[in-house]
Length: 443
Image (cartoon, rainbow, N blue to C red; front, side):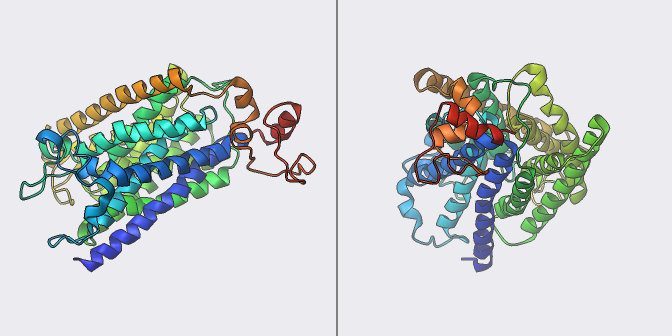
């Protein structure tokens, strides 16, 4: 057992866990004040449900022996309940349970990312049902394709993207960001636009959003560098490429804003930071620091332009999950085919380093396959839930705010004493009093 690497992955896992409140703050600050608690609930609720499903069958479906050896899905019963991982494995350098916990956080963060697309208008109960179905039917198969490698001795068969196609995805550009981004698009097509769209509520708490972005940046070092699964050169290179890509993307986003709108914004800085982190996630182990800067600059310049597509095509992606995670993930995945160098931990060269077109083709197939599968299955899940449970709140609830109606809470107490709080009674969820309480909070 490598105690140094074990300590590093424990620390990296804790950093990734901190991304959960980071994402809640990042998303929550960007919503209207009347729905910020609902957004935070969607993040934490999805994470909690995913954690339970991961122990029951999720880890096994990703890292179990591929059913039929086809590389499509791991055996969901092989590690049922994870009891087999409690004992140390003689030839393992890391405790198997630690690897399982690290990967559980990847699954949890991925489904939570989808929540940003549906802000302000989705029922909480159906969201939880959607989260469970989406993790089971979409995330687990795709993660098996990308993250499950064949055992060196041939005893375990992994996923087809990792082993047959041999595309590079160091930390989840396809399984996490492209997957969540295209899923967000599928759900909003079923859910429909918010009332008054495209005139949307402005972010109600930009300091919370910037703080959330900073926490996510911290956690991303654990997310990417921890994916080396060892404390050594690979993790160190990935740490640097992750840092510098985020820096370059933030700067590029601000330049685009200044040229396009005449001013650079704090929301743009936070969004540019996340776009760079998304783009470097698949490529952090494949490129040099200079390559990481190039990827960051491209992501920071393209993603703000991609966000404008939602108005052109008429889909209401509330918090720009499509424009940042889908587009950023595609950029980072495809640019591996151009900028990869065999001096980096992944050890392969792209077109610009003499490697030819082969790697670019592999990256394109990986990205396209994940997009196609995730979009179709997510669309089917959303349509079934829409027809059975109903996904969307009614118009009165949306106008009043989902926090008070669905959760009987408001994020901020702005001098509403005498409105029911002083005597411990519950504020009514509808009616004139409800409207009077919520209206001052509306961003």
